[in-house]
Length: 350
Length: 266
Image (cartoon, rainbow over all chains, first blue to last red; front, top):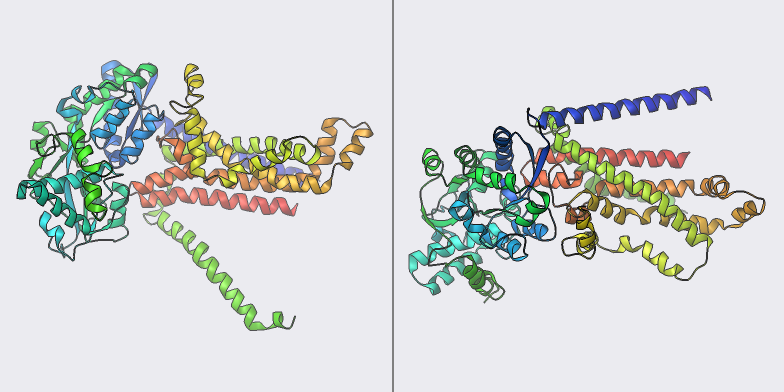
């Protein structure tokens, strides 16, 4: 009996030792992650964002922590949540306590506003339509560009297989669709011709995933299709991950994609975080943050920073959502993406 | 019996069994390991000891421990009730215990959103006392308990029913107290099914994805369980890191299975 008892002591000892080591490691990591010095209670902010912003906000959050501690003496920890933009907006509507939302497109924030969580003028509260960084839609092709894709018309060639997400479910996909529409409208000056152009383009779509990141994985990891229609920042990220395997083709005309940001008024009122949340959004427009955005492949809105990084972002004709051609998101949503809208008509076999 | 002794059939079955296990089990698990270490030991160790991973481990382990305790208490009481007593609604209760097995995990998550989310039935109550349920750890615990709670009850009920309540009644007649009956008569008889149920519940709690994904809100460092972290890393092109975290889940599952075999042997 004695040896059995001692065996149990050993086990308990080893177990406690492992547990102690684990707790030690955890405390160490916590200490490493905490902002360096200063006093005062830690405030936490939750930033609910979309799929491809993780690297950017990780870098930005560190910068903001330092900035805010210098400015107010307060320690701030920012928790980030990533996912499909529309889905993320839904979680906020259902009760996810987001102090700020940084989503892929304005309508997703508008839907949160319509649920009564923030004020109707959210897009006027910050510069540049509350879009501190922008992007555009480009083509990602495999090395050597075997299909010789140079501009939008090349996507209509019979041998081309396009990968792009579904505009009904994905925010990024709406920008893709609208970019094609912008090109065709500017080129042919006719709604009917634009519709035919975009229909032909979607006939060449081989995989219509539900989200941008899914589409990227389908194209880059699973090897489907010849060309991926996607965000410029997403395309650049793929090229960084797989050096030398892909090429980015910038078309002659594309859309100015404006990922929007907002403070969620009702949440910050409840959590008493309005000041720091507003500073978090405002600081996105600072020179330092704009540089971080550019380093993470977003086009800066600050002209000086944009100038400094101009080699990274080829010049092209960018059509905005407020161009008379589109007339703003409300009109676009109704005309193109609502049930029975133009996308349904051209893709539903109509 | 002649048929069973022919060598070809034995070999055929053996090859089929190994082929099947090889393709659906050994190969994928092997690939997980290959991917996990593809960028070297350093990446692997940094990933599994990073703060985000440790926080995911804490959350997963807490959710699992809560489920285990709940399972033990609820499972044994429910089984005792159903096996030893007759009461109106017994069949209904019996059927309700099985509900989490028949309901899709996504629905399980959604019912908690509908109940505790903004605009949900119980939302005014919890927002009045400033307790956040959905998109916060409590919802992770609730859903994990929900998807695991039938395990112990399901294993114990048939054993208790087969055993009958004569021994307990005799002990009571002889003057044994309730705790004496529970610990000296009933518990020894149901030790094996309780352990088996707990092992299944643990495995499920560690790996639960669907229901937890709905209520989590994917907030890094707050509501990411290990399974959700794997998905998040995968979606961020961090394939090797994703598989590195997956090895933690794989390892803990293997531990749980080994523990089960050990418990059954004793």
